[in-house]
Image (tube, rainbow, N blue to C red; front, side):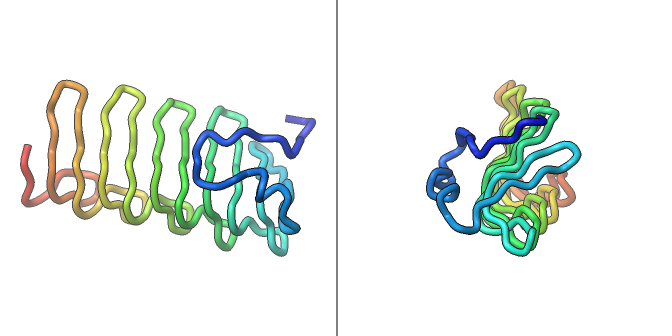
Length: 143
């Protein structure tokens, strides 16, 4: 990661990287374990950008006040992936989480946990549709 370039191929279709790269606010920012490519304002990540981590993890999407904020896609080193809304760096709002083993949760999130209404589908045909609290099925729902 010593030679940082502006080149990057998006995995998502959340924004046009070439367009962002051509903007006046585009910049590169190096961290101990990652590189940010995207819009910067006063040294803070804003607008659209990409964060690529050393350990095969990445985030593509919107930023505000140096946090993941707005629409985004985060892919984790274990193969899991979250696509949806972020607020202050955490899943917040509506989003879909895909586990590498094939499980899927599509629903509401609050401060990084499953909270509200959502549907989980397991790999053996099992599922739950209903209310979630603190990432656990809670209250009314259908299995």
